[in-house]
Length: 73
Image (cartoon, rainbow, N blue to C red; front, side):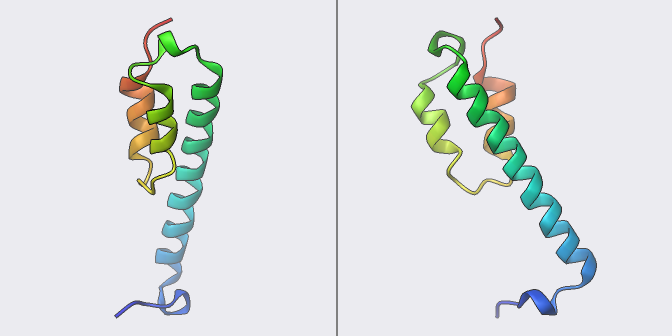
């Protein structure tokens, strides 16, 4: 059965908020970098990386982009 927000402990609420904010910041930074970076400096198609940012990934896709998706300048 699903829990309501009010059923969660304050620590669990805080953790959910921190993870959500962290994911939003990572996705925003990755989206800005994808938009500004030329296609030849990105491994794989830009549209695929951008589309991956739509998925709720707990930050895994933006981190993967920064680690594996960018070519050295």
